[in-house]
Image 1 (cartoon, rainbow, N blue to C red):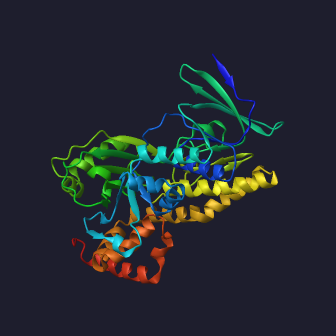
Image 2: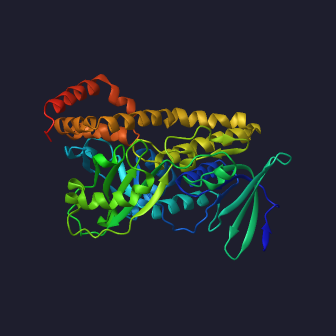
Image 3: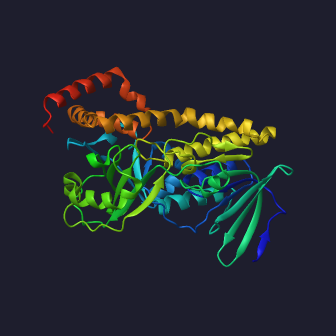
Length: 424
């Protein structure tokens, strides 16, 4: 087999995986003058199974890169202005939360568009992107303090690269991190997605989240994309009665039999093929090693309450880039120095993930809390919906729900729901 060696040059950082986490890390490192190699196993444009909901914290990164401006200019995103949620018992509230904020909390952007734009932004500031190149092996030399990364292109043999630091950003399964013995567990959640042809549904809102009892602590959602297309997604989150292998069955069952989802879609909705993807939730215990960091889905940077991961992957990518710039400045890429990357992302959003895990445990056992929350939102209107949305999109910490001005009315509403169990 033909082998091409690039031993003549050594990159500062090799990033494996050009999704939002990997490409964002490449962007920020290249902006700091680092020599960055970004390796993607597929060729762009390529799809990624996702709910396509891009939240505020991710949008800030996209604005920094100029990507958000491109999305707006090309009309390839759709703001979620009018929407809400439906509780397990069917209590719902739909409103315009965007009127209470400088900009809406969520924009729907297809990942087949978003991921390539971020990767191209990284190349514009100096990163080297290599596509269609699955990594088959990575090994570290203590003598040279350098990684050797071997990729394989179909019918083109293997290619070897060298880099001083390796960043694993290759998704929830993370074959790279698993091969190095750094990630040892399987992904613990799963999500589905199916697109719905424009003009075939009766859905009139921008985004609605549904909590069918059978899915708890997971949920499903309908979001409007650019061009009036819709996406329907289901999230199976650990702790409920469903297993990841139930995804296909429950996805189709909810579309046809759930009274609220089926009504929202209508009887003539032309729904495309369901696709599924794994989720690694809540963060891994150790996301660093000697001359190595793990970023994004590979590191479990997905909120266990919502399944949202884009913004956390991008936040972690920026933290990783900043940490590596510091490491290069003092010439220390050791495990003991890079440990601060893990501490920093834990402080930024990791501890909030732990609150998310607790919340999923609570409302799986007591779905009445979601009914009470929906009833409370109905009572206080779109301004309260905006606050709920901030928590669910990571803009506001989940501990916000424990503040007296929220907790006390919620407790009273729970009492009302107990007294009137059939109320909706």
